[in-house]
Image (cartoon, rainbow, N blue to C red; front, side, top):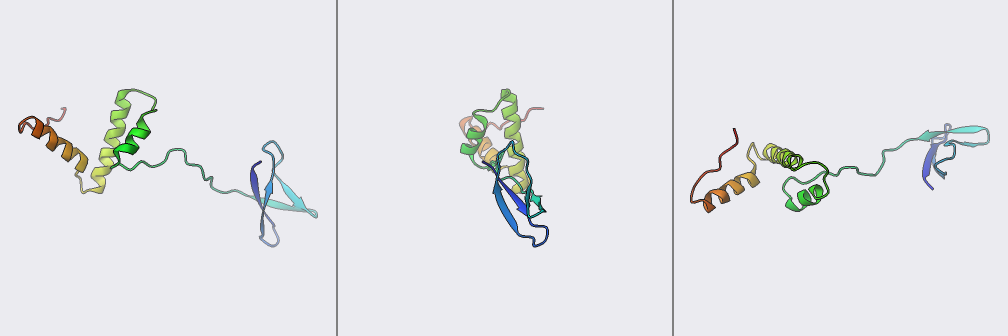
Length: 113
């Protein structure tokens, strides 16, 4: 059963009441109607992914609905966040381009036009 919070209008005291989800959500005591207190839910729908964590990226995208392009777009968003945090330079992208160049005897990575 869910817990609901109610505030005594005279004293400001907050009490918790267990009520069924299909019950009327009100509480009264001695002809005094208590005010319902609404709180922020503790559930997290989409947790924040660390843009530097390959493991979190993999966990987030393994069950992602959509196309490969959607995953690339998400990767680009994380790259933009890394740039924002590092004075306009994405260190992971920079490292990947350096490794690309090393494997190809100094050839530089070309951006799509």
